[in-house]
Length: 232
Image (cartoon, rainbow, N blue to C red; front, side, top):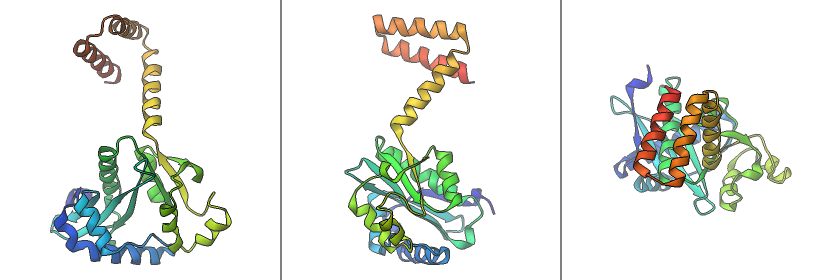
């Protein structure tokens, strides 16, 4: 079984018929891991589908295979991709990674300026997050929205979180900051550009012309050409 046997898509309102099955599997999976999750009702999950804030996966035969949804905190400044679940019969096929990629893409589309974060004890999820550009952070860098932290009350480690005054716990906090990503990408571009003196000089001449006499279309084409040439 491989990932080509699955369809991963943004959930639609009509997919609400799978809501009961999804929340049941979430609860069973948490129980098997010996951890807790923020419990959600079928109505809540169906609502996420209706809002276009969820991703669902199916096997090619139409069987439900996986799910994940988006939550927002601090007035949209923070986004969490929550409730990632894959049906036991379809695990080990790379489906969790595909769902995370899709819901991450959806989050970036709906909330391009938001920081995307997660709390997890799972090494597999940490690896996926790292591949997407998340970095480990302290709890203080996450949303401080009380509603988010209330979700930890159903976790078996909640007393540890309280004892540590919400500064750390058994979960690893990971964060994707779009502002930092843009800065890092620009820095890498500049570093690579400087390794090619002639190209760097040409780039600076074009940049100077844009500053003196802006030509949006011409300048954009030139920059795109340079970027393509540099990284091809």
